[in-house]
Amino acid sequence: MSLRKNALGKDGSRRFLRRLLDETIYVGTQKAKGTVRSLCLASSGCSHKGFVATRQMTFDELESLDVSHNAIDQAGIHSFFEPPQNNLDRPRKLKRLILRQNNLSLESTQTIVAAIKSKAWLQLNTLDLSLCNLGDIGAGMLAGVLRQNRTLTHLNMSSCNLTDNGVKFRGVLDLLNVVQEENRTLKHLDLQSNTLVRRRLGRFDDEDQCGWALVDLIRKNRQLQTLNIKGNAFNMKVRYALQRAMESAPTAELDYENKIAFWMCKQSRLGANSPAKVLWYGMLSFITDFLALPRNKGEILF
Image (cartoon, rainbow, N blue to C red; front, top):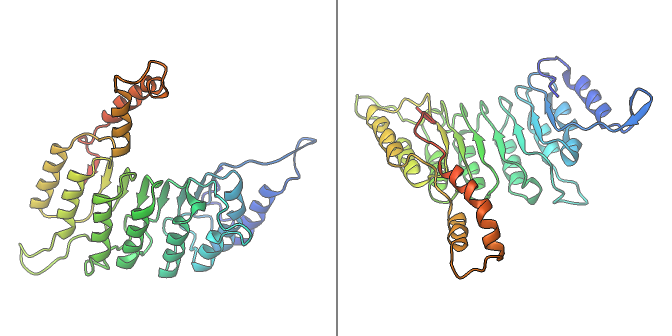
């Protein structure tokens, strides 16, 4: 369901969502219960009140929520992510959450990070925080999330001022190091337009630690399928290094756990009717498709 750019306002969106949650909805003369799995409230003016009104839906059937450009502040973030008092680990059904272009403060980022680390948000696989002023500290917080989280596959942090306008790089370097060394579940990472280069006077005095960290990331983490680093003004030396890194690792690679499973299924000592042998034939199709994923046709954008 899309209510994008409908100028509902905070009161209109809240009333509408309460109606969706009402069990006395009638289709003709028959009573029916509404089921909404995807909801878009982008640019609807719902503000924090309308955002909080969707909270109950995330416990029921809602799997995708887009609240882009709604001036949601800390009050809305806190109320939405707050767990029920009688069941702190009650699972949320939400798989895709888009918070693009909202008024996220440092406290808001802390609230989101703490929630995602909990057991209640294990189904979340896509998080969009683009055009939110996360800064260097926010980048460090999300690095801590990726160090523990094993469900996020899509993370959009484009235009988030991750280096405080090219001044601080500790947070984003920590983030890149985690993706390089520890996290193997993230498949799509967007770092577009984040000033990942520190400009200095002189033609050859730019600091490109982030660029070289990205080169190492591409070489070591072959699970990553899409990396968007457009709009960061890397010099030609770093660009050539990124291209060479792509050429040296053009295809995705199975993670360690799947390698072990793949090896075990090939053992001759297993009987024909063993569970591993039965699974073997079904795994072959999956593994061959996975290894064939291309990474050399423009998926690394710069």
